[in-house]
Image (cartoon, rainbow, N blue to C red; front, side):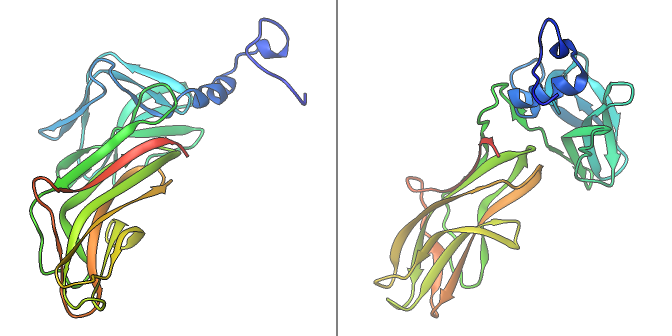
Length: 267
């Protein structure tokens, strides 16, 4: 049949299979924990166990409800996942040792709730409002204390954030950082960049050659990316790329530097 549709009261569209519901429901809302329902499936860790609170979530077109806290023993580094197993149509909360990414196959589909690293738990929930749109701010950090003497590529202290990114999501990373260059006018050059981790430059928020020694510039910029589902780290980095002077952050109470990650919608 070249063209069909569902659900209908009669005819071919009256066959309400799981696959058809998945095709529809995946378009209704992004995958994730539903905001504002009971305990929000919040994870907590104590004495070798992760407890997942009550709540509800969308997982690959299915709606899952947890009406009682679930306790999961954790024995090593790994992830705690909400899992749907197609064989038997089973929803469960499981610990997977030694991995950091969930299974996303038709047979076993998972979404991450928490991650264990070196005995420390990180909350990896990604939230959905249920409307299929933007999820808003995922993390934010700001600084008001200056960092001086920068020459080589250096992390800006305090402006590194962990960001839980969901499946098929578009993420905006915004940087705002006043800087000052102490050096020779027209010669020294400062570059500020947004990085994922320490190896991947995503974009620049300032590229400044001063017109005078000690000149100040407000750097501001953003990148929009589709990075894939994972707990990711984004940070601001500064460097003096030319000259012999130094770069510093020119922040204060009334002029902070900041980094913000936002989920702006489906990829």
